[in-house]
Length: 146
Image 1 (cartoon, rainbow, N blue to C red):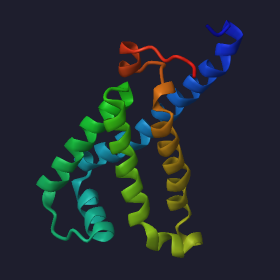
Image 2: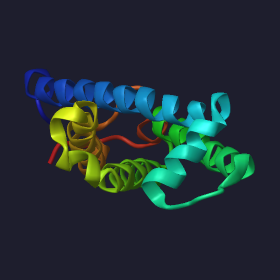
Image 3: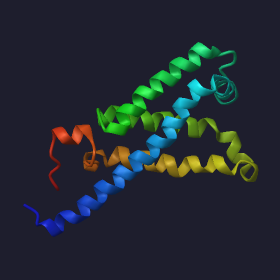
Image 4: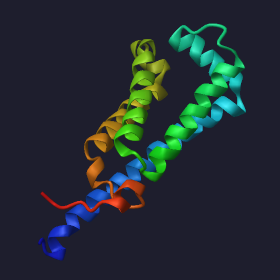
């Protein structure tokens, strides 16, 4: 059994992963909420970045609803492999769909923030078993240091 001092780095890792999860959840939650608050914006995004012209408010609302469910599961750490994977997939697709914005970098600086967030999503997915603070799945299992 590791000594309390040996567990300290695991606690730091767990806290870091919690902060990543909450930070990602804030961004993804706002993106999901935007589909309800301003469905016209959601329609414009679907048309411009995904080629889904005339997507309608119903489609945007259904996508927003699915995102709210996924982001909620992600935020509380439930069904980690699936919810973390879904968030990674959503953000990965969004990041790649914006490829034209990266070609005109200086007029689209804010789009580059997607890359560190994508790295955070990948990190959280790969280290999910160490994401144990305020995490529903972790409350059901105990992580043993390898």
